[in-house]
Image (cartoon, rainbow, N blue to C red; front, side, top):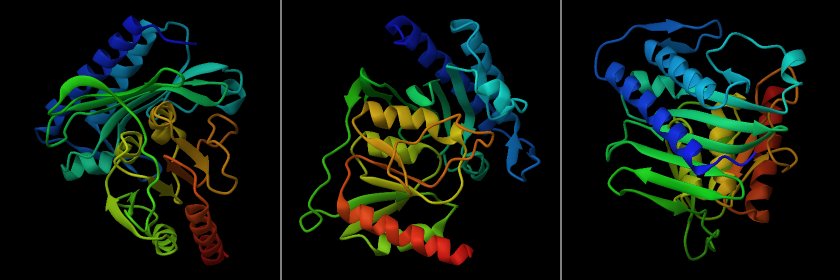
Length: 284
């Protein structure tokens, strides 16, 4: 399913409008609740959820929508979905609460388990709101911030670390142990911590080379940005097999450990094996 340009523009406009709703809440005081899994929930999560679900129901009526803030939908139902929308209304709720601007709104179109189209919108970055979007086979793009105009983006070729250090991005808050083991096994590199799906966007823009995620995430955390990275020429791979990450393959919506990259290289693959081995030993 290739989306026509008019539909894409309406989807982008709708996500950006939802981002403005989120920003109205961001700029004032708001309550924080705890969900059953002890993760935080704010009214911004729910405002974005309702706005994005309404947008998708309007633009693609009849296509199922699975949002982080939806009620639970069983795999028995989901496995019959050849195509559906996967939404994380507010990725980085903890960053939203911390008021550091590193949160995003995310929606992905998934076909036969593959995220084929995605939009990531970051409404609170220092240089202004930025939107990334991509469709496999059609390319990836960025608009907003200081540049304003939409432009194509592409992953960069992995440099020779003897000449230029690799750029590695990681989470601000989760999975530091295995991440640090991975980094220690790499050749020359720099590291940067940043919240939400922004890590993928740095890969897609060629501003970072590797994002290893060896701690739990859910499919809605990754699908939109995975589509963008893939459309930009990169890959998001299961850490254990280096096969592409897939959605909706089982009852659980938890992802396995994965790595997002612009380019494969045996040196980081060896580092990944070391990190996975160390992580496994610590859990036994």
